[in-house]
Length: 456
Ligand SMILES: Cc1ncc(COP(=O)(O)O)c(C=O)c1O
Image (cartoon, protein in one colour):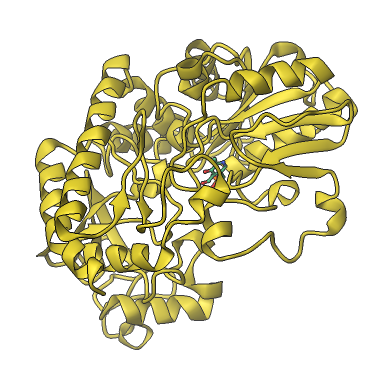
């Protein structure tokens, strides 16, 4: 763990209220000079933002304590407002793949910003990004860009229902598709971390036509089903591979009853390979949802699919979709810059790094007597804690992870300078900034952290 002074001249709004005037801040510009500590700043955030976080998944409720408050990030590291630098295994929950503040992304965003940040009219960059997605993910003859993965999954559901004229949606326990009402049932990620079966505020009507079935088993469908939505590699209940025949079986079963198959590739898209999980497993969905990597770390989402399906979206068809900031110039510039770097060789390298980190973390935990496994699926890496855990194929298996042990490991790793996600069901994200030196430093931290986790 290193401590470096936090720059105070970047206008980052993080100084303490009482110090603002002394620090020369105005109501809309903070110099940062008044910052005292993560906890003071977080206290102030909690007065303005529910729970102090703008995404529940960022809360430390499951692991204890308050979050570090990020001032800046660079490559594989993030630095909090106290000046503490951590190796970052969160990487914005997979939105960042080149590493933080990558020069290509920064230049693309700056270059786009000087030409204007949003127009409410078509732009060349959105055309190019949609084309690029379609060229690499062959099932996507047309692509509609939007602002988040959540918007992508909710649009995909509306599209599938509109195209088929059916209402029922089949989803898998432990998969997570964002904060989409119809899919907030038995979800993974934050829904699992926070111990929610679903969520208050979703009317029973919104989930009345949602059927939840176990992951890795092909359900028997009927003609009421509009669509099956699946994470082709589950990455919100740890990281769980599809068993042989699962995705192909879903394809066949959907075809049998005339239902659509939706792959939620918000995490896997452009992270596990050039063509996403659908190319890796050679199964072609009707509709694909994207987010995260295609925005290079800026807000984005996308729905892609066969032309005859996608052309049912307005303005061509009767299924409405719109968004003021959809296809945003900054997000599309950043996304294009990211995809530009993501050649096939990059994924071979990322797979090697994921395997390497898995082995390093396993060795550290084994030698300390801390029971944890680190499953790898392609470029994705997960963690399962506890003696009883065993191998994981579905959400029931995943829930055997020892959440208390994970919390202990999380805290010990943070203390040793490594930031992991504050939830036992999240993936560990390895990107291009995680060089051998970085991985070795993380391993050294794990060797110091694991013994403390074993006996806490
Ligand atoms: C598989 C999957 N789908 C959808 C989403 C929602 O994306 P967003 O957070 O951009 O709304 C997530 C978020 O983590 C996700 O992991």
